[in-house]
Image 1: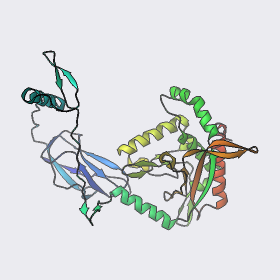
Image 2: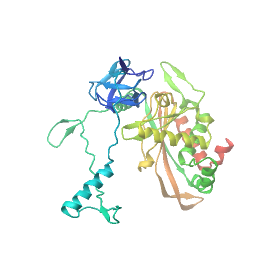
Image 3: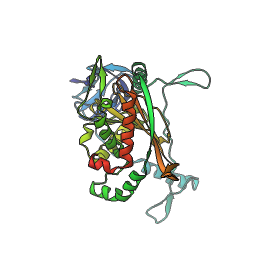
Image 4: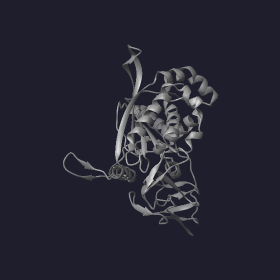
Length: 375
């Protein structure tokens, strides 16, 4: 009996996906639950498992757009599983080949790795690897050019960012933060923090996440959004943390960030970053953000003007920490400084509120004891 494999429900707003990669080819025998297909959606990559064991058949090319509910493959669950036979490993095969070369033609020219053999001698094994050459689908253009189709995620990023520029009145305000106190606090308690919280690392992002939550309490309009002629205020801070991946930028969301302590923030941020780079985030983890933090500093950016993640009204840009001369009590001293940028929707947020938000954030970072005392 042929069992259908259909495109699953992708999310409330997603109706279509793209066949990104077949992990199993037509004619192969697959086990129940084994991933046979990777789908690319507007937000994440999804695995499609085999519903039953059997022989797979499909004829859809990679790169084909498919709709939710569409049948993309069949599994013959009456097919007999092939008998598995042991095959030599790559290492064993190479060893045998090198032994043959030594016997017939003398030593081979390669980087040597000694392996003991039964007669007490050694065999030379080459460590040079065969390069993984992968072709990339593209159409030829002018001489010296190549054309590659934009991924579905890249198209969505382009569309959303342009829509944000077209629909919102984006303005950016700047300030600078002295990171001395945070760096000193991390240096003093980092090892103890990691030991107490099962390896959770004390990073800068958790300080900024807590500072954003604190500043949003005083200026809740930056946690609101516009819908038609109404302002929607939110009771919780669903904090988006922008993560750069090879496929593009994604923004997983820390739900009710105001309820999370430093350790839980660090764990979730680290987990999101790891899974984002592997394409393992769920759709629900990318939806419902109310404010976003983006850190261009990890790539060396000293200053930038971040774009809003619509329909949000605010996004905070962090940047590289740089030792700079600053005036303190009439003296010029060197301090670890960071420029911060707040882009906001001027339709909803006035300049006074935006500037005051950054000043409040600056106060919390420069005296992190305020974060613990909520003052």
